[in-house]
Length: 306
Ligand code: KIV
Image (cartoon, rainbow, N blue to C red; front, side, top):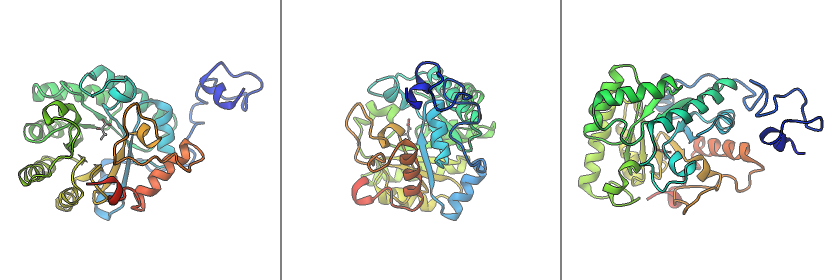
């Protein structure tokens, strides 16, 4: 029996590597995190943004992968509603419920807590959980914060800026999300680059500035032309931009974990690099991602951007 099988399979027998480890998933605090690092806080994110240190974010949906990403030095873990595609096999994020998000946020939070993880934990407010009213948004955000999130992410500008301000005033740190906003993919007419027309670019710039003025700590820019994303990043004083398909000029990067491990039920997006290629294992792939984001070799604008 391999060590791997002993963790995820039958209870460990005497032929396993460790007879003292808990049978499933390792002993508390005996897992992935070897060298404790300082907790990543919203203040630390602002410092990284100010100093130019790139921020490495990955999605995670469960305890073990979250702890492994944290141990590899990932700064922020996003429990994305991409779990609709990754974990549930849906074709969009639209069907993900608040209860789904609460459950996966709790799983990730428990994994980080058990391994004394440092990464900042961000969770997505799913479609339909914040569009109705500011009060609905607050009630939804409270559920995710109580499940262990330290920041929530919501999609959109315009009306969503007011919602963000309402949450921030009440002590909920917020990450915005502009560009390709997957929850409204039907209205956008598909997964396509956003902000190519002058009018759209101007709207995105204004939304970004308004989110920062409202107090948003971070802002995901998805499938945005690299020049526009870099331009928006240059205008942000305290709000750290995190790009996905937005070029190398943002304050940080995010990828869906399964994508960067080369696992995908559909077609891999242009902005993804498979970090498993050449890596001896998953932990090394996470470490390779962190290193590439930090040293600026990922993304490569010629390959991964528009
Ligand atoms: O849901 C998600 O995983 C996301 C990231 C791709 C930014 O929103």
